[in-house]
Length: 397
Image 1 (tube, one colour):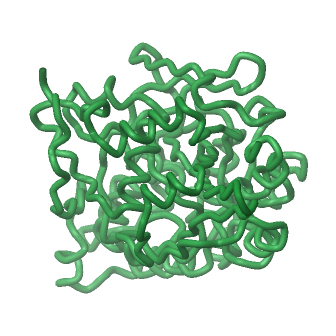
Image 2 (spheres, rainbow, N blue to C red):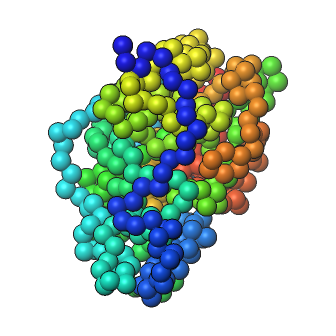
Image 3 (cartoon, rainbow, N blue to C red):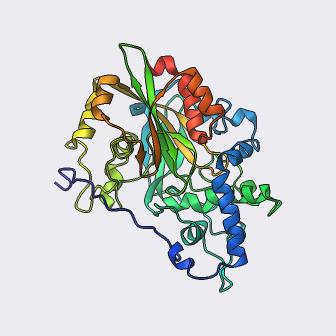
């Protein structure tokens, strides 16, 4: 059968993907005034990401924020208690059409710079690829959220999407907000046109799965977790900010068609991200000849078996939206008994391809308060920590 064993991940870096020209090419010529202005706004967005997110959250009612953090959500997406991950029904469909804003409309075009030839960049991702590309910037396939309800009968429905869909709309919204902050423009027409940030019919809604990974020492009662500081030079989203580990876009492991069904699993996505971000595995799973065989991959098999024997618990706390970029995260918590955690993640490096790692952070009221109130933490991470602390008795039972 295809993919009957997991091929060793290959350490090849992913190429920068662009529908336009690369940043290396663009630097060989003089930037236009319009490109320079766009870059000033983009750089301010990069350098003041946390403060801008806090300000953007004030555009919404206090009742829309999660646990007093900048993260936004809606009652349908916030269950009263943590949901076991396997209780959420997933459905994939290719039949629902999307009629919302895609990023090529005039309301977005006005935010894009003008080239020397007098034409505007076609999309926001084109401008990023040409003028401000991070080390990893690739337009991979994703699972796009269509509908979700995490109340009595939790489910999520997804269709097909691409990574740049979120950049073309979400980053443009953030750019517009930053331009208003800098008095470069006076209106937020795009944010107004999108309206409800929780409605997947209004904008392409890619999602990331953000996982708080708790090491639970049943003998001492001590609980710790690893924490990430994202490097703005390496990532296109939330550079310079703290975030839980691991986090990854919900997407197939490769572009081949057989991956779409095989990887359509929140659990399998978390497994891959754990391997990449905490064990240092490469992201190239060599799926050209077949899908990943999770049953014969020792790491995946061991984690899944531990889930069955209650050494590991996987829970969902909800779905949240970043107020600045509209980045949308499924908030999950993984609790792992200390002996197994130490076996799986014996030596967590202090760096990975996306930034710096603090391997051991105590899960205490003081730490949660520090990172959600005084440190530049990504909205999803702040909301996650506050929710996890509120539900700690259930998560650690």
